[in-house]
Image: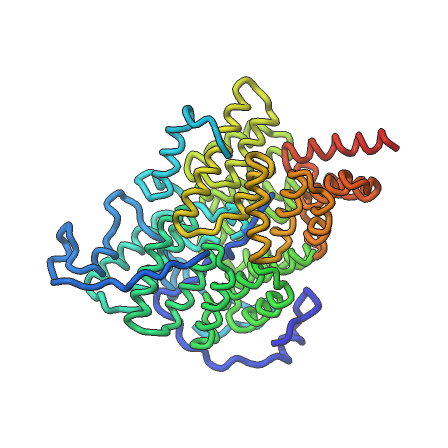
Amino acid sequence: MARRDDPTPSNDEHATGPTPPPEPQPPEHDRVPAAPPREDHREHPHEDTPTAPAERGAEDPRDDAPATTAEREAEVSQDGTHAATRERGTEDPHGNTVTAPTSLDGRGGGKGRRRRWGPMAGMVVLLAVVMTGSALAVGAARDGRGAAGHAAGAPEPLVGGSRGADVASLQAHLRAQPKDHGGWAALGLAYVEEARTKGDPARYPQAEKALARSLELAPGNEQALAGRAALAAARHDFAGALAHADRALKQNPYSERALCSRIDALVELGRYDEASEAADTADARRPGVPVFTRYAYVRELRGDVTAARRVLEQALASATARGDIAYVATQLGQLAWNQGEYKEALGHYARALAADDGYLPALEGRARARAASGDRADAVRDLEDAVSRYPLPGPLVELGELYEARAATGDRAKAENQYALVDAWIALARAGGVNADLDTALAAADHGDTGAALRAARAEWARRHTVHTADALAWALYRNGRAQEALPHARQATATGYRNAAFLYHRGMIERATGHDDDARAHLTAALRLNPGFSPLGARAARTALKSLEAAR
């Protein structure tokens, strides 16, 4: 289907498009995350190639040592953590009947830095324990599209205790039937979800092994190829994600997971027109919450907030699973917060937390909205709660900046502790095969080694040109005293119409440094008008710069 230039899809446009043939039945375990691994930078994958596991003699699978290598890989972790997955079917994990969704045009879808490490040692150990999967795993969290990671921003199809039960069922199934390629693909996707929702990149190598096993058993199977696309995207290997998604779609043009991974990859490669076309295609073939949320993000990146809000509201109306409700309501909250609509944002976050009271992105979003509304005490409490569960870069930086802005006794040291944990997270993420250059650039430019930030930003820019990588490179250059070189990138970051106060603030500060005072005044004013509480420290710096510009007139 050709891309629609009008951001609001109409019935006539869809009606003139091709009618999809009867769709192949989706694999039993296939379930697409409600949202992409979007970068939510204030927010969002390199694959290993392990050898396929070899089997050994059969033993009682109830023994501590499973009968085969396949069984050992499928064994439930003894430390009490589990991977995440959700089976596809007529009911969600909570017994809600899942009805066929309606597409966006109203039609039905198809079938079926060096730091003070002494005081931080205990916290770094805690971070390592959380990220390697310990019994401390509690609650539910999205990436760190978000979860900034997110943000990359990123989706949470599973909620509550269903994760452990689902992965345990998959593992039990694979102990009984280790030759089931679909079961291995589902387990690989379960590990991707575990890594993404809990910020645990140690799960990615496990996912790679399970998906490789599936492909060994059934070369070229669509479920495993779509799983590899999701894994590559989670590791920020977006070129790889696109290649895997295209291969999967050759096998099954109606694979929801592959369609969604294709949109994610194109967005994160900065190929926005192609992403818009891919979103239209996915809407025509497999309308539903996962497609709707991606469609909305494509529109938001093009500056069409009205269309993005409309689509997210439609997605929320069609969501039945608590995880989907929590995710979509949180995205509506983020969209409202981006426009400075804090009361509306708080309402959306309340709905998200009513669906899942441990949903990290909603806690993080509520903290931002509370801080911007002047309720700093509750904002700090929310973020302290969030990072005590999952110490991810986004909330760690936000909490550090709130400590700095509050400036009570001991707050500077507390802030430094949060920034040091970001460094630890990045090191662990890299060990799990994740490309963390963008996270490094964003955090280090303001709170770390600015030279490292610039190196990371340049590396990421060499891989992909997006509004987020343009902004990160512009700010890293500026923080290294290279404002003239930064200016074209700052302009590129704001070229699509994406309404982001942090981007406008960065551009205004760079323009001020390069002598473009009128432009600087305009963009700093625009940032504060759009979202006056976009950052505890950034908003304060923007006001200070504006006063200086006015005094120099």
